[in-house]
Length: 204
Image: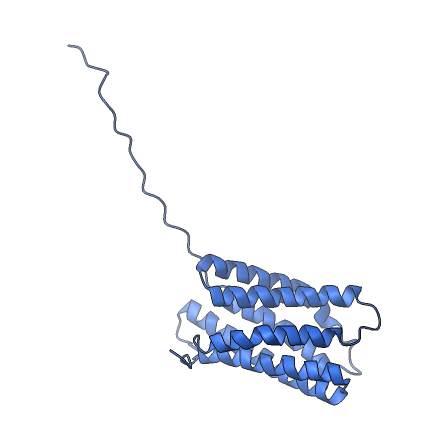
């Protein structure tokens, strides 16, 4: 008996593997933003006067506030979250830019920092508006940050130590709000018994 070798063999098609999911990078980005904001604004608030050089924030502006936030922003793009991706990437760039500016700026910089703060206040304004559709905690991060940027810009343009110090205090509040929002994201990611509320969107 002969067995025909002309039979057509149908190849087996393997189903495409589902894309790998990634954890929410938001809490990491918020933590990086919070810590760097805190370290800078304890200097602005004069908490470090007489007990430290006041430069502890600079390295973290590059490594944590800058690079880690940029990474969080890229991961948010991967997850399709355009709001968080834009926020983390932009403020990651802000901290890297501040680090570079401090390193290369001449001794007398005039109002350069004031204009940097104004530019980011403009960006933060429409992000604040969009944050009304996220949740109350995120909205409060952008609200306190808006106040920080505006007050510090005024302090720079007027060369007022008092106004800059007030901006530092508002910046510390901003850091605390961001830390809380980060912790709430971690608690949601764990899914355990400890859950921190973030509030409903102001506009839904």
